[in-house]
Image (cartoon, rainbow, N blue to C red; front, side, top):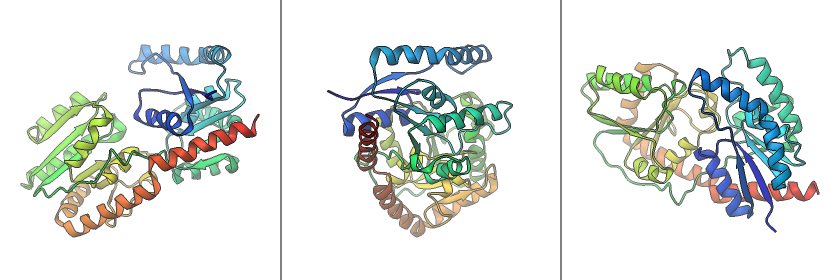
Length: 351
């Protein structure tokens, strides 16, 4: 009989899909899901979502009583992870999604989030750190590190394959949600600088979010609307082709845990130009296998884009090195097999 897992989290997210797919494929688990139904896109909905979250433990316990899952897994230690801790399940695995999950740092809810995260850490039997930057926070928070598995889920290397791009211009791609924390406006302004210098380029922005119209208006103001493509949200299966058609990958978040998007770009021979923050410093060394850019430094971003394109030999060495790194460290087939085996071992030990 198949072992059953209850997944608490937003099941539509690419990260969540990868996690659940891997557990089915390599662990032969049956997955059932539970997530909040109220979107977090307005003040009224935020209030409704908080109310739904407040009553969620009752709903989750009902699901557990009916479905009898062998274990509960959850993403984000300060939201669904806390709900997992309250679920009453005998076996719980939670994943920290961001560098700390305590975001935004200036929020009035920060002390409360810290409290519920500590409770989630304590109740969990296995804690996922998808990268070393997360483990640093866990250790500093007093987590029992014997419960922590430091390993990314990895990406499907049969989908994200290397390609050769011999274009004589910058063909850049951004694949992050159109939210303020990903600083698409700084990226567009840097390309505005390139345009003023007469440097040819194309820029593809993949995804959707609250900043879409603002960013479209900004391209018009910068007079680069003919060179920027907003593809909207696309299925993850269509992403490899867009990455293969690009030669530079750009991501400028102000905070980061472990970015599957970065691994996907590295696997596809896209040269990474990313923000200089701990979550990216784990994988990228400046001007060795990519570029690290100070947050919101538009001039630096523009100059480093020019440098990376003009130094083709350095860029080509980097993309070969990056593909090898992803094969060795972020291979979905290997990593999800390890994670699945870990779950079975955990369940066996808790019988």
